[in-house]
Every structure is written in structure tokens, then in C-alpha cells.
Length: 505
Image (cartoon, rainbow, N blue to C red; front, side, top):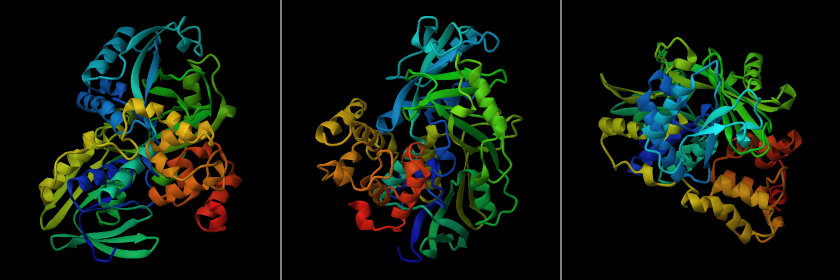
């Protein structure tokens, strides 16, 4: 792209909000540039508990509008990306010393009916003495409530929004930082720094969706030293060897009023989280603390008959949620709702700042941003994302469940575990990835687990993957299964440090 190009909107931030906004606006006909300083989903959006959910505990804080919007969105997103979204049943054991059973039943009744549930099964009462869900639990727990929500591959949800935005005409870039932005006539002059050097572009409007770095963008690129709008709340998770055999999940109540999830993860593991604590440092430096690890292990130890210990932890991750600072006294009480602030007037071009938000409601947030954009620089198009599948999701929920088998039938020469994983990650785009493959050798060099050069090139060519970390921890979760030596070999191959021809052979 030539220096000095002009866009309708420049979106700063390649998390779920930024990518969702870019997709929505591009589909309406706006010219859009999306700039992400690191990699897509490299911040908050890949450090979630990976749920599409209404937020059962938010009912206690009377956030009914947020919960209803999120509940409605569950089945919308399931239909838009059935390859990366799947239903999950959550078992909530009744703890006699905490919330009373009548309150839990009431909350779950509201949860079932507030959002127009259609496909997901309703809540049921579970006798833990006879149900398989009770087998991993201590004998003290005899009754539970089981309800429905959805699991999602969060980082893939982000990159698929970026992919669709690009397919609809957006200029989508990772590794591109906005270093300066200032008024220039009726728009903005923006300086970008990327792998190719420094570039200046113009935009009629800026959308600051930088997540934990929203205030940093305001203070840095825009020179607003007074900006203090974001409350950073740290959430940490541990991944342990599989703690129970069934495919359901648990939601455990704690005596401090918080809850912890235990969720089946990547076939061989259990994901446990999250914590809620205020965070004052640099978002890039966030890491799980010993205190948080102890907290999560203790939380599940109150419920599981054979709880995991420190030796069972295979991976940890931690991130910060950029909540709007509403003055709540406790981190877990701060609103998870999104707040949009539009600066437009006094001779300045329009600037929209995005604070807060949830993975589940990103699409609705993007629609709300589009309304603000239309008011600031003129309307284009109409809302369209509710019925438009994400890349690879152009199939029914039932067909998505059968896709792995269909791929395996078409490629009997490949391991079924590989075709199942490719179907789960790429949906119908798996056909594109495997085009021309007639034998396992056609996939090229292996990098551990079942990762091959064919898949790596596909991710580099179509999903902006640049490093082994991009591939192993965001485009896939194969980092759980490959060695450090294999990861370094992958980095070398991606950087061209080895013979490209042999890498593809």
C-alpha cells in the first residue's frame, strides 16, 4: 500500500473487539485499516477461560442487560462458527455452607429463560450419588445443578474475525504499532511502524480498541497524559493432567463468593480458572503468582476426591482484563459491560475509545461501534454479522460434528486424529489446507505432535502467523505437545533459517 493512503476508519488493537469491529465495518463498505502491534489475540483475548456464556454470577450484581445480551449471543456465535464453538454442560455442586439451593435454582431458571435459549438443553437437578458427574467428587456432595453454556477456541475466534475482515476488503496487519496520531484537517494523520519500516496514513476516524493498552494509546500516540480509564484485573489459569474422565465441566463455588471452572481441555488436560485480582503492572509482564496457584488448587481440592497437585500442572497462563473503571470496590464486582466514549468536536476529528467488554458479546459491541461510526462520519451498509458465518463455519452445527469423519473418508491415508483436529480448527477451510494431498508425505516436514509444514504454510499464508509462538499457542494449542527443540526448529523454518524447499518436502 502506498504511503499516504486514506481510510474511513483506522482500528487500533487486534484482540476480539478490534478484529470484530474491523470485520463489521468492512462488511458495511467502510475502508478500514486494522493495526495490531504484536499478534492477533496475543493479549487478553487468548487468556480467557474460553467460554461463550451469559455469566451466571453477573446476575448477583444485577447486570441483567449484559447477561441477557450474552445469553442471546451464545447460540448466534455457535451457528456462525460451529467448528470452533461447542456446547458444554456445567455441573454446579450444591455446597451447604454457601449459596442456598433455592437461590441457585432461581438463578438458573432466570439463566435458562432470560436469553431465548433454543438449542441448548435446559438446567436439570443431578443426584451425584448415581450420576457419573458425581464420581470425581467428594462423597459430601450429593446434589448438583447442571446447565448449558458453550466452549470456544478464543484465539481462533479472533483470527477468523481478522481473516473475514481482510476477505471483505480491510487492510489487516499484525506486527504494526501506531506510534503517533494527530489531527490533520478533517481527519487523522497516523504514523505506523511495522516490519517494513515507518509509514504515514490518514483516517477520517480512529477507533481505539487496544484492550489493556487503551490508556497507553491515549497517553502515548495521542499525548493524553491524563488518561486513566481502565481498571486492569488479573485472571490466571492452570492446566493440569486430566482430573476427571467425563466430557462435562464443573463450576465450583468458593467461600469468598468467587467461582472457579474446571473444564476438559485439548483432550488430555483439565483447565482450571480463573482468579480475579487488581493488577498495577505492565500488561505484557503479567504472570500467575504463587498465591493464585495455591488458590486454584485449593478451590478444586474442596470438591474433587483426588485433586490435582503442583506436580500435575503442565502449563499456566495469565492475562489482564481491561475493565472500565467504575469505582467498584472489588475486582470481581467491577462491570464486565463495555463502555464506548466518542470524542468528536472542538475542531478534533472523531476518536472512539472502547473500554471493557466480554468475548461473548464482541459482535454486539462491534454493532454498537458501527452506530457511533455512522453518526460521526456517515452511515454505510446495515447490520449484517448475525447471519454471516466466520471463515470455515459455512456449515450447519450437525455438519460440523460430522466434518472430521467426512475428511477422514476423503483422506484415508492420514491419521484420524489429524483430520479430526483440522476439522475442529479450520472447519470447511480444512479442504483448502489438504488440497492436493494424496499421501502423508505430501504434508511435508513434521515439527512434533502432528504439525506439518503444509499446515504451517497455510497459517503463514492465510492467518498472518510469523513465529512458532503464533502457531503453537494461538493458531493451535500444539505447544502443549511439542518439545522446546521442536519449537525452535519451527521458528527457524518460519524465519527462513533453514532450506525452505526441504521444509516443504
